Image (cartoon, rainbow, N blue to C red; front, side, top):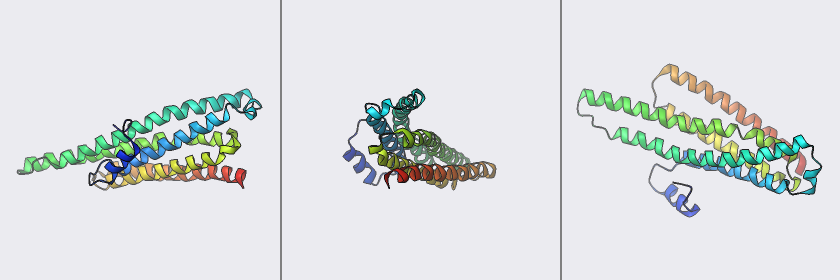
Length: 212
């Protein structure tokens, strides 16, 4: 879906009155941009003379980082598309008939399940995005010094993506009544926010120390 559209077409769809694509897709795109920037830093690092001065272990880390970034781009784009598909399930559930008590009960159940499915996609994006932080952290140490600001931009894009994904988790969670499920997800949100803040700050501090 999104792999083959132009930036302008995506923005036009985003700006329309359709509920999807929306914030969840933008969050996925933000993570994809972060991974692409990480890939760029690797590609600007490996051919340089300074790269040859690194230890074999450090060289291997940069090469592994490049592969991780490439794989992550595809994951995040797929999650952009999954976000649109999953939310459309909620919309379809709301269209179910509600003329009888049985229909109302079935509709309410379908809506609840739809919100759970819609919640899982941004949660999955959050999980996958958090995995990119160690890659960016290593590039803050080993990457081409002339591209170090791009590592910082990548970290900020990733931070925004995760915070955005969590907003989508929260708004879907508000429509779910199961107490135990809500408690579990709220604990997840708190832990994810704490990790997101800590990792972003760690990388930005490294970047600022190298460019100031």
